[in-house]
Image (cartoon, rainbow, N blue to C red; front, top):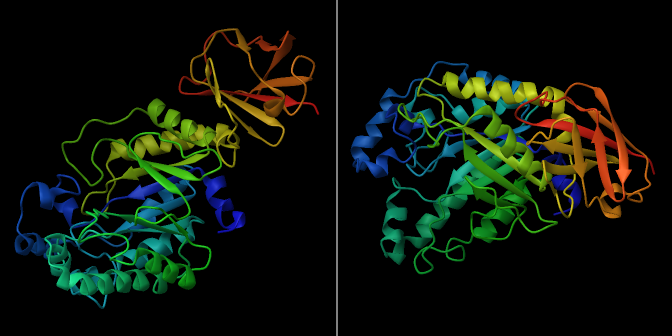
Length: 398
């Protein structure tokens, strides 16, 4: 992949993950079928009740835009095997079972209309498909059937919905014996996806080295120079769970976003809509609050550079062009001292370079001076203008 293929991803820094499917009816999260031991036949009957009103995808897309997100990823098929898209390879799909609705088409059209990039999640694990259950149980005679099914569905996703920007795999529970990237020919599947969708980005969860790494629910940056993304929930469970009240605060979400961005990664933040497509108010309000923060501070997130050491005592440090950004999570009061700003960070000589400081949050200028090789910023407000993350911009003269 060339650097230009990843340029939009590196600039985006923030995307929306959407877990939505039959499991939303059970209100117990996306693993409800497995964790409650529901038989396949009983779970299947949920499809007859899955009748969300038209227009919910448009509401998701508008919410993502208000939140300041640049792309989205929808669960086209989760581990339960139900396809939100039109598939000729199984009747267990929305078009056949949900009144002719193709939810992936509705999603893709809605998000493109809002100017957002479109990503598709696809689970390689499938509790519904007999060949998957057989191979996972050791019946290697079904390996070819499973491989052709997975490749065929990826082909459908890559050919039926226009330009696709991200292919996001999950559910590859490889045991190395009956299930492996080699036996399923994941490399060939991804090569096919790239032929059909030139420029598409693919995560590494099919078991092959692709465009970017993915960490889940904790920030684990890839090595310097590699691209990565952290996916996480606003609360604890990905799919809608009526009694999951463990919501992260707005401050925590802003910290996660900034912490990913300054270390060269993206935050893919999940919502779990109800079965009727509505998004719980606790999720909507938090996304909108982060969006309001980005209206003031977006230049310190989108397209910023990963520096060799992105930390300072009061928070995190990043750069875009010649402008540095101090994400000041732990407000020091009226004076801030920033040591160890080396030449590779300043792009100028520490101790002598002219630095103009501005509180990005308010537009208020602050005084700056050098104390040896320590940058001192004075005249700051006694209390932080933004309690989640007050950003100080430093313009450094060449």
